[in-house]
Image 1 (cartoon, rainbow, N blue to C red):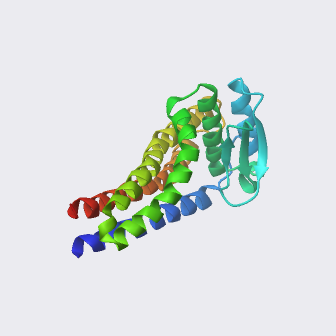
Image 2 (cartoon, rainbow, N blue to C red):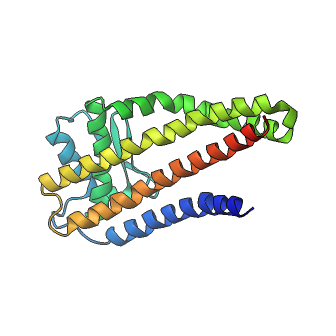
Length: 224
């Protein structure tokens, strides 16, 4: 019982803490204006152009921290504040998304793998819980639980593959904004805090996914 409570605490508290951390860190450094005075859109455009990515568009995206890179449309979408404002946080986030565009240009292996896994993971993750719930409720149908676990494992692999993609994009982002003089001096440490906080959300998601998979595997093997 004690171990189960610890498990529940981890899968509930860890994601909540990660979300709190990224929002509080972002809110703090979104109020600090970068000395370069470049908006997120301007910073993104500069980095893209410096890396020969003139074909990639920079557009505004509605919503809070809705920033993303779309490899299909070759578009870096920045949330309203990051698009229009010149802040350390906005610069870091914009550069991170451009980092994904650079990965795409260079055919970064983990990014290519993640793209291939997206449709498969979406399908298997949703379907897996149908088999898992039936298998758990009806112990005689343990084979269905096994099928559900196998399908869920695809989603777990996707979460794990996402980690190097995100960390690599952040590393590229820091290299670009420092080398191009978009941020200076102590702003570098601030930008790293923003990117590290954002990375925590992916680490938390991967950790929860792995723990859930392990829990289900223990249930499955205990019935044999």
